[in-house]
Image (tube, rainbow, N blue to C red):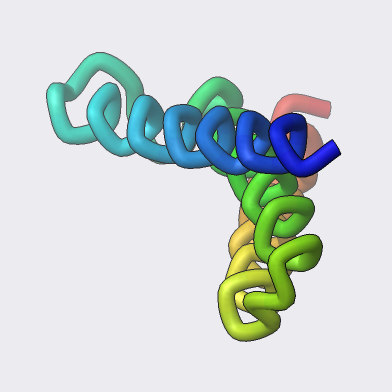
Length: 81
């Protein structure tokens, strides 16, 4: 189980870094579903990893990070509807 939690954490880090790389390289806009989805999935993975390891400040930060991504995705869906 410990190895799985660590893998989840590294995947989360990779997703958030990928989102930032794509944004910084101008490949995707901040208001894109892919950017927000990568941040959401990465944050969820970090919450799992941080919570398991007892890193409560990191877990709390990533709950907020995920909340911001959800908010952005909902807003984008409302605009399209």
